[in-house]
Image 1: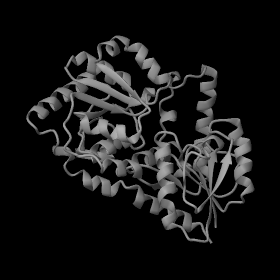
Image 2: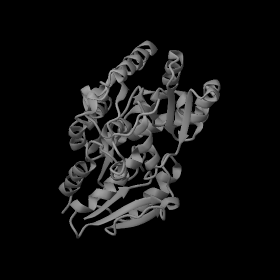
Image 3: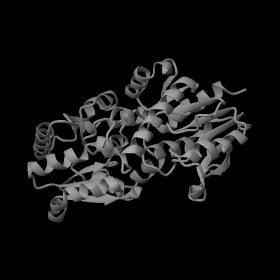
Image 4: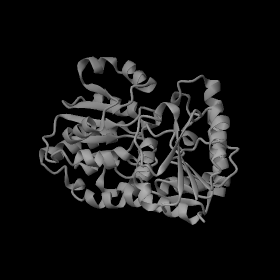
Length: 368
C-alpha cells in the first residue's frame, strides 16, 4: 500500500494541530509493509522530526496557488499512490487517483466578506469562487470526507448533496505536546485578574465584538488576546488604540505552548465569541486545565461541549455583558468551576490517539 499525506500546513494554527497529531499517532496503527509519503513545504522540511516510517517529500506547491495545481500535482502523481489524504480543502483538482479529504468547516463559504482578506476585492472574489468549486469537487470525487463535528458534517451534506454517505466524524483532541506540557503545571494555580481569548483574529471569530462588549462594561479586569501577529491583529490594534494604551486590553502573539498553558491557568476564564467553528480547540484546551469558558451559543459548541460552557448570544453585547457579570459574581461565591469538574469525560471522547485510529482504519479499508 502506498499512502500519501498532505502535511503542507503542518505549522499553521488549527489545521496544523490536526496534521501534527495525525502524523504522531498514525505509525502505531499501520501495517509495517506500507509505504507512507508525507508532503511538506521545502521551507518546513528540516523544521520537524517525524517517524522513520515516513518517506518525506519536500514540495513547493503552497496551498491556494497555481503551483499547487501544477507542481504539487506532479509531485504526488509521480509517487503512484494507492490512496492520498488531503488534510485541507485546497488540493489539486486534476488529481484523479483515490483520495480522502478532511474538511474542517465551511466558514469561507458561509461568511463571505471582504473583511476576511487583506487582498484586493477582485482577488478575494476569485478565491471565494475557487473555494466553492474545490469543496464541490471534493464532495463529488472524494472516497470519504472527514469532519471534526456532526455540525460540520451536516452542513457539508446540505450544501453539497453529493457528499451524503461519505461523511466520517473524526473529532479533534488535545495536541499531544500541549498535554505533555500541561501535566508539568499545577492545576491549582492562583487566578489573575484577566479574561482570555485564544485564536485567530479573522472577522468570523467576532473579536471586535468581544473587545467592544468588554470595554463598555468597564470592569477592573483586563482582556488578553492571544493569537497571530498579522493583518487582522493590526486592524484591531488600530481600532482600539486607546484601550491598548490604558492597559485594558493586551495582545500576546505567537506564544509557545508553555506560555499558552500558563495564560490558560492564570485566567479567570476563556471567552470564545466566534460566530462559527468547526470544533473549537481553545475551548477544549481551557476545559482540560480547569479554566471556565464563556462561549458563543452556536450549534457546534452545543453539540461538543454542552453544559460545560457558559453561553451567550454572539450578536448581543448585552448578553455577553450579563454573562460576564454573572460569572464574576460566581467567582466571588467560589462557584465558577462547577462546569469544568468533569472535563475528564470530554478528554476521553475528544482524543487524537483514539480518533487517529479511526483514520487508520479508513486507510486500511482501501488497502490490498
